[in-house]
Length: 301
Image (tube, rainbow, N blue to C red):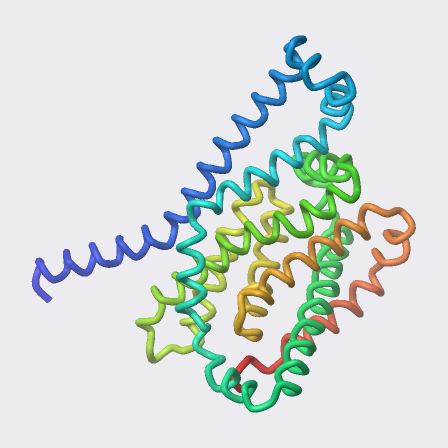
């Protein structure tokens, strides 16, 4: 290959890399800017007497006493604002990426409404079950290995999350956060990585495993502390796996939402924590998770 050809190939690779990581940078920057603006606005309302009188003493009291919930709402709004400039890109990616595996399955579904409904319900049940068992099993593993005790940042994050009013926390961490993150990490980044790895025609598994691992690594690093990095990586791989097996973005979002909700409810409730967070339950849930991953046939097979 000539020097000009090598340079052209290098430029092509660089453009692909930029296309993969650019959405994350846009999301992150818009997210941070929105957090700064909304936090400054809330602080101004609290500190300015005229503004406080205008909105009423009750609202000011709520803003002061429910600081954790207010910050969580700001975080949720910031995540949603982060995906706004990416939404057209997201729609384009999921419309043009059927994961290369569900065209035959889609045709078969059209043959019978009964089959279609049964197939969708089966996937939903498998997704929710796998989300519940795997998320709890991984949390039990981390607690058993005392990984959660090694990170002060993790404890601060957990304390903040469980200080949020429960219904608000369940909605923000169980719906808003999973949706925004899945739009970025699986909807756009994972699908673009699959296109980038599509050149490996003779290595079909690598074309899937490569994007799974890279998107999961980025998803893990995004969470900031070592415990959530490891958890995010493992869950990121599982979410991508569910995306492949289900053949629809819906299942990736549903898995993420169910996993977050399960962990938030169980680890935040002393009664449920005492009954679920045990080594025996962890082993049982891990076994169930492995069986689902192995025997869940991908869409189209």
